[in-house]
Length: 355
Image (cartoon, rainbow, N blue to C red; front, side, top):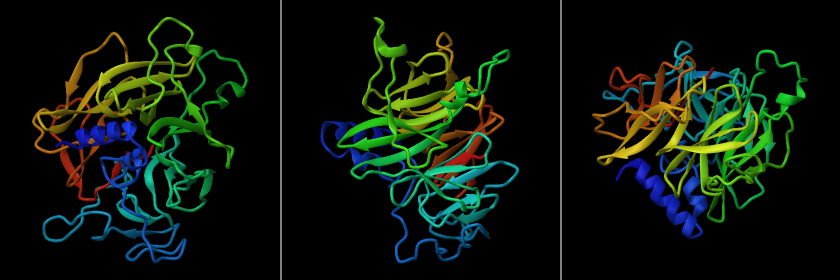
């Protein structure tokens, strides 16, 4: 059974019973998407894991628990300052610039701020945390109240339109992080401001128009997960697990959500004009792309000859490359589908590009 099918099946069961927390727990590609394992035990808070450097420093990549060795016993890192690729594995270490950086706590579902100066992730306590790229300067943006599983944060952002002379407060509402929350079998998207540590998250409720007072069919209010921000107008793509549907949510002028495709694990391109998502085809998870324009519904299978599962896709900052997780590590491919995927790392984790 494909990764996406396992993910969707588990989610459906969670929504009908009370095991939603398991769905988004950081334990593999079927859940939060981090490929996270349990946080390391037996180490003092802030101490370095074996084979890594202390927080704020980097150690050369070596064979470790964060990835599987390539033939001959050598782990292939695959990240560099040139390609901007980073990989989080649910452990304390994150692969960055060809090395591993110890953040001093478990790092699950790492995401980068639009300027690349901050990382957001769910830590070993299940809290939403930001930190510097070297693991220092950790700030708890929101503390998990308990009984919830948080996952997959993304930085919502917007820039001023040409000719807009309004004050800065007009864009301040976009300085937020949206993340997935599971509680009692119910899945929701929540958001919290990035400049107010300790704030209480609020549920993001999608509607087809502001207030949901029109006659259009309304999108599902629960079952929403896996948000991905893109573009400069406060837009996010997200998945609705029960419907196996990908939606796009635009909050720039007025809140509005609409479905785009059948699939899961969406990622918006940096310019917000294209979407990559996962769909099961003949027993394997394939990567598909399409325009975010409603009237341009042509989809393209980027992995038509897939003999493995490609999941958890991410766009490069220039929009030309897509990275995806596979059972063997991380592969990349041209965003236009002009070439087959190439494995670049044996580290098994969530790929994400740092702007």
